[in-house]
Image 1 (cartoon, rainbow, N blue to C red):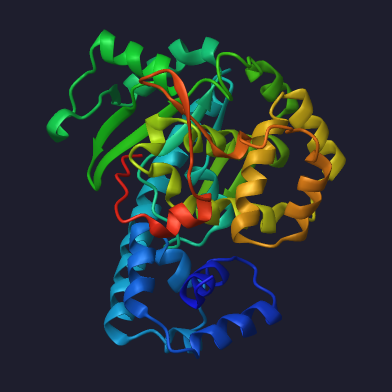
Image 2: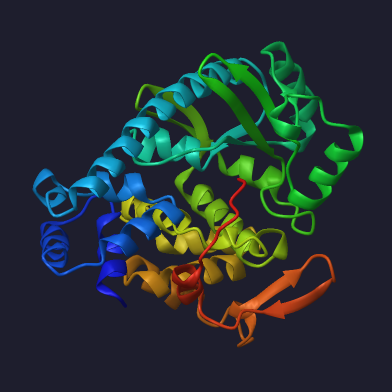
Length: 354
């Protein structure tokens, strides 16, 4: 692996040990191609992870103009996160008053519990809602001024019934709820399926329980640490194995890898492996967990990852499993011709719309 890539992967980690900090410093002392580093950081939405993952002394190794550019990105992301957190707080307070079964996902959790403001950019707010509660949710969101819109030409226009049906059938979620706030437009992506229609486990997930998380002046109801990790595996697998996402190379954006490895670093000591394995099995997602952890292994050696893969060994007996991608247009299976890691670093353009 190129030393530039190694530097990025080590720097974006949270809760680094002293030895890991020394490794980062040693890598910074090399003659590095900073143009390539800057390109990877921008292309993969890692600028904040990288800049805030360095100490003040380590930041001095970054060429001045790149350093100043990264600093501006972090400032902008801090402002954005503050605004997003205020909206999340408002919605969470409203939902807590109802009997709606819900959980904030991904960026909302990361911005509340895992990262300092400025590390991560969130384009939208993801919310998991039990399908039978969607009408109640719609009533609340509309009372708060949100409508469902695909934002044609940047305009907030109510989506047609056809648009709503296509979104629900193809993407496992709803046409987003959007509202123009004084600081900009806010979009809520509503997921109603924890996995897919062929694996109806949604009620079971809520029965495992949700919990409250607080941080960065934000409070949310989220999935518990076990089902949260299960969802991350399902979500990663879905986007890496269907041309709905892979044809625009949106599966290859490395901030998703950063979020998963950092989640593992945050919770590895709290998660009981055999309990986690039981949940994977009961939710019928062991294959998707295996896929996700196998991809993570391409980027990081981590004891937790190795233990999980050891426990999941034998789940997959098809040597092509890790290469399969479903072509949703032609209804056939196609195959990757290079590793996920190789593809991520070779990508020249990512058409990210999430």
